[in-house]
Image 1 (cartoon, rainbow, N blue to C red):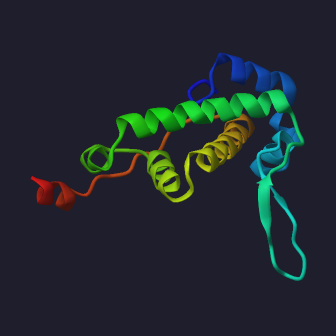
Image 2 (image 1 turned 90 degrees about the vertical axis):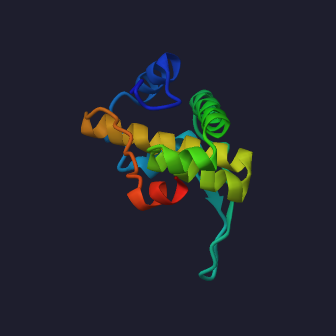
Image 3 (image 1 turned 45 degrees about the vertical axis):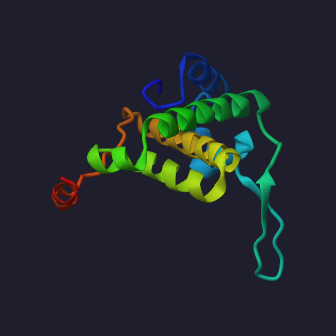
Length: 147
């Protein structure tokens, strides 16, 4: 689990101690909901209204994931600009973070990253495989046009 960005020794051990086995949860959304990282819903009449994150769940684990997400956001935005994204092979996760931060702002982006981290942690724990960050292929035409 320490290969997942934003998850270190303290976060990993706290998650394993609290969760134990990932089979307690049906999917990653249930784990994120248990941590209090999904938005509250106030829906009626077919209209869904998503509010802020719920404060239910494990406060300590949620704060660890949010701080890890904040570290990821700061690192990605500091070292990767749009020009660097075109020149280098960046991951889908990095592209998603950059697009989301431009649309929503930093605090909502941090909570969305923490939610995604919880879902990735569930996938890693339930499958037993190591985390591999998928890399986007750079189109040769883009590189040729920039040169």
